[in-house]
Length: 469
Image (cartoon, rainbow, N blue to C red; front, side):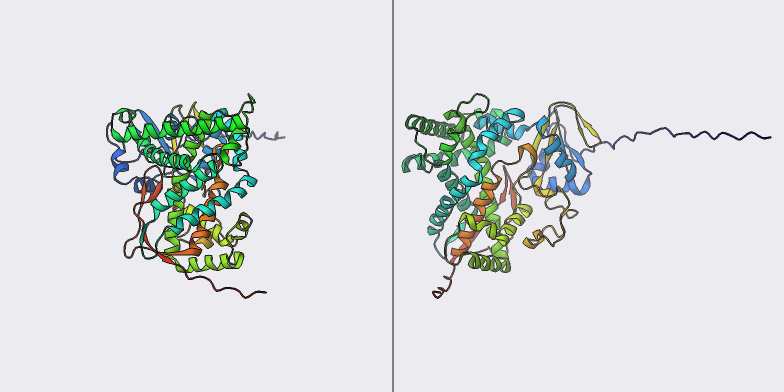
């Protein structure tokens, strides 16, 4: 009798598939790397990487330093959230820290967490609600100076307005008018100087040139003014109700001591540089797109009339202005101000299937990410209704207006409130005519801003007075 045969099951060996090598972008030159392409057209060069390469691509910015541009939305989210606490912020933020001092924007790891917790009360909902009246008054004051029929340098006007709103919010009860004027002028000088110094080699800022001397003097003057204001608040114990007073009342969670005047000065300098230029660019692009799209402007005006009647906008109105919020979100998508945000690996790090050595710069470009046709249909079209719940949703992690993770912008709600308040005030008072036959091009310096945006001011006809009920 034949014995039954035993069938032996053989498990095939597991083959580990190595990830594909990370490509290097074409055109790198000895010593210069990709500097030539970046100087010619930095936005165009970074955008071209998304179309030509995969989720990671290497570029050369400085000799001996490897920079990987992360292009896949899920990998970007991993970098910002899962890996965020273990990464340094990279050269851009490192340089800002050298120029302005340690702050919540420039710090990494546990120091960042401590500073963020200390500043969070200044950006809490009750405080932002109180800031709206200041923002609206400063916007009305700015519009009062615009003469009908005159041409307006919109980005310059929005930069002045953004700085005005920030400084009035920070110092509304702590400085007299003359000190306020000086600190505003000095912060404006610091803002202009930081963008240049971030991209120049370190030795350039040590040259005895007039703009270097102006920068150093303005930075020192702001620190002196803030330190003196903090000392006055400490001596009197008076709560002025502004952001400066709130910062002083937020103690360090480890030592229990309040921030020093020098620490507060670093936070304010960084807020001014990181916040006002970005807000100015978003406001400029929003006014440009509304001027180019009269149908969108008409819908916004109708919403404002229905929600507000003839009274000024208040904080409580903002959640009900759904179309205005969609306009702001669409501007943040189409004209995002961030063109190369950096991080740096401290140890050997896994990013997806790749292993990245310590000391590698990681970067991503929100401007290019938000314009990717694979993520957003018709990406160059200004379409606020793409943000309707019924519209086709964008892929997960594709929209990052304020970053993500532990280093997400601490002032995101402040910024959105500022932009919505200013727009709701401006568009009801004036109509801006865009330049004819000349599209406005973006330029990327410290942020992405309009290269030149000059529009003609027209007074908007007053709405009819409603009959009394």
